[in-house]
Length: 106
Image 1 (cartoon, rainbow, N blue to C red):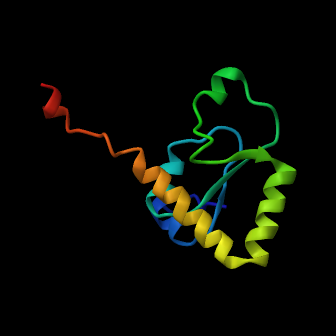
Image 2 (image 1 turned 90 degrees about the horizontal axis):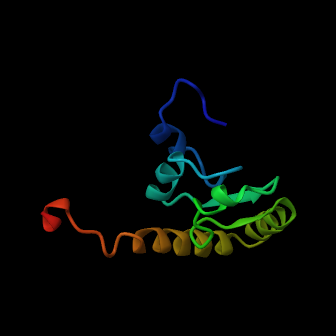
């Protein structure tokens, strides 16, 4: 849990994994930039408009039960967390492969 007196950058330095409930926020970018894996357990069904905002390929949206199973897998086999983190970071970075500076469009 984040301390109110610390920045998100300071907070992410002490995290090994982020569980994000409901919709992803801009705070997710701090975790993704630092290659901190994020899981998004869905406690309640999201509204259709909310479901379009997330990227389930990047941040898996699973039931709480499936998220707990995944966490159990991560603790029983630490290399699985490493591979998940690597794949998630690779997917995040790939989102920028077609990025161009604004000046290219002027």
